[in-house]
Length: 251
Image (cartoon, rainbow, N blue to C red; front, side):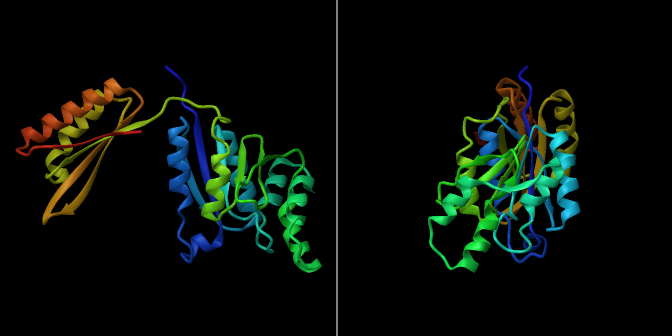
């Protein structure tokens, strides 16, 4: 069986933790990576605090195949992600000439340009992640990919990595809707999970059309195993007196 390729996503920014800004980057990264055969196994939201960023990068880069960060690479005093990555890898922080050249193409007063050029700082030895929006590039150190926090910019950066990462089996999802309470199917669902230990089987309650129900989601990499588990789940719903709605499969 093909070995899974794993990823961790680090959302960096006090504005996320304060609730002022709502993160949308995790969803896009996880969905995109999943389609490429990279499974997002872990995610954290962390503050703009140097030791937290450094320690978290060092911990996660050793545990996962890839680490993707968003946020903290702008021109202000609290944009410290680049210097934290340099510290995590124990290298100097330098001004990258390619990023600096791109920044200097947009004329600005000296003080504004000095602030912008802070975005050209990368750890020594870093490679660049292109920025199709035309702004400063992101960068990569070993297995750590550092991208902007602005969703449109981050999405552009991530798109340039297609075909450049190792990939493993693609996780697919099959959903079945049942107008049953979770407790009505919990026991048999547990038995189905035991019989299909390579799958993740979850139940998610909902209320619609004035009725309570449960969406039963089967996730895994083996289509035949997913199909077998889906059949067992639908039979269990029928045995409980309801007709299941097969919502289909998606990657």
